[in-house]
Image (cartoon, rainbow over all chains, first blue to last red; front, side, top):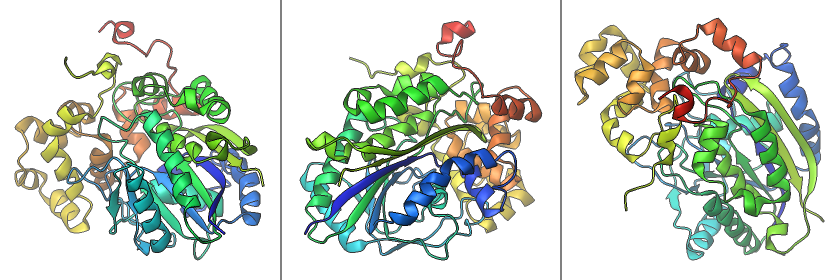
Amino acid sequence: MAARITASVYSSHVPAIGVAIDQNKTDEPYWRPLFEGYEPSRRWMEDNVPDAIVLVYNDHATSFSLDFIPTFAIGTAAVFPVADEGWGPRPVPPVVGHAEFASHIAQSLIQQDFDMTIVNRLAVDHGLTVPLSLLFGQPDAWPCPVIPIPVNVVQYPLPSGERCLALGKAIRKAVEQFDEPLNVQVWGTGGMSHQLQGRRAGLINREFDNAFLDRLIAEPESLAATPHVEYIREAGSEGVELVMWLIARGAMADLAGGPAPTIRHRFYHVPASNTAVGHLILEEAE
Amino acid sequence: MPLEKPYLDVPGTTIFDAEQSRKGYWLNQFCMSLMSAENRDRFRSDERAYLDEWDMTEDQKQGVLDRDLNKMISLGGNIYFLAKIGATDGSSFQQMAGSMTGMSEDEYREMMINGGRSADGNRYLHEWGE
């Protein structure tokens, strides 16, 4: 029996959320509504821990400086240390990879014409660890292996929405080619609207964000045609991270002729520091 | 046909493209060096001397000394790299972002709590008279 995708999970990855968790501030009035919004997902996740997570995120000038700028990369190491981003590493467990499965996915993706950069030395930053904390809390060890897929959304040009959706479809094929009965989740992280630079910093766009969630669920193919400049204009220069959600969405069955997924949870909150937080879980039909 | 850069028509926003990255290469790589505690200490003990070890323009160095993030961005800096300077100083991302807007730290924080800056009136250069 082959591996299969059971759900896709979407979440912002704001660094300040990690700080709030690490410093036990989640009950403070500023943070409580946000963490309450993830509670249903935490409960769902307790019963639905996958055998592996393919986690799409972006590195924030942590492991990738201007030395190397891979558009799409995949972490094939056995373990990924937690990065020191300048404030000291987050007090969270190291991220255990799945070298065999990751290498399989890398080979399949390249054979499907996605020229992935293969990375074996990768310290992971808040982009990857904050979503894990939001969904799994503060365990001594993360409950399953994680295969990081870092995407360049820092230096333009970035991969297009269409390219991201197509990568998701290719990930689905790669998973289904793996000859072990693994339950796999694909996570897409980053966003929602935010701008961290310039005189326009602080931009938030609830209408855009909620329309994005609606369309991600119902019409991902047409959503993927959204050009980068529209994200920048409507959702802020860093809001463009949302293209990474299309990778996770592309991995779902309905885009390969299967049934539509079920919405397990949807949540939206403003603000977390400079950022609008969005979250969604889509579960595949049995 | 020239390269398309439609993102130049967004006010108060600098997109970090290949051209900006080329201009800011050493500025950003200097910032990366602050990922090490030893380098942070050396920078703090004599900022000017530390900056002079890097092949940056005088304007870029002055931007760092002044902690003028808008200037550093105009000279090729990227916010995720520049954030290493903020981390060295002990500033939060919200303090850094707010410092670029002309608002006080409290005003910016209050704006975010009240739902952030609207996109209305902030989409195109002409809306800012630019």
